[in-house]
Length: 89
Image (cartoon, rainbow, N blue to C red; front, side, top):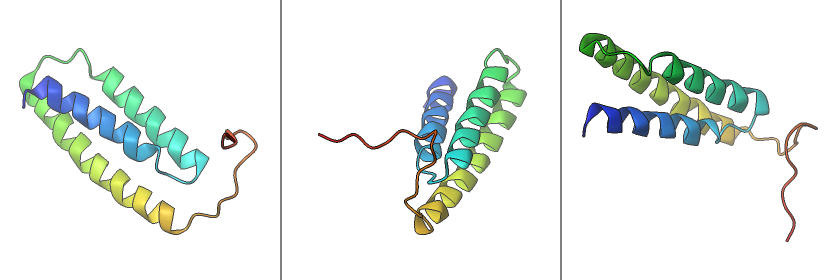
């Protein structure tokens, strides 16, 4: 897998697993932090720095995955006022 495809996959996974958090605060923070980090490093051309960034992103993604799984175990079901209400068909 090329590094650009790998980076895009990492970014998508951050968004996907960030959306699994039950708490709006954690969900919003995780997605915002991922966007900021990837945007901040998108113009990097140094291969060693890119490799470092990818390794850190992989490690951080594993943390997000674990925390999102834990978040689902302790879900309360109560939504905050700022969260969207589920659609009724």
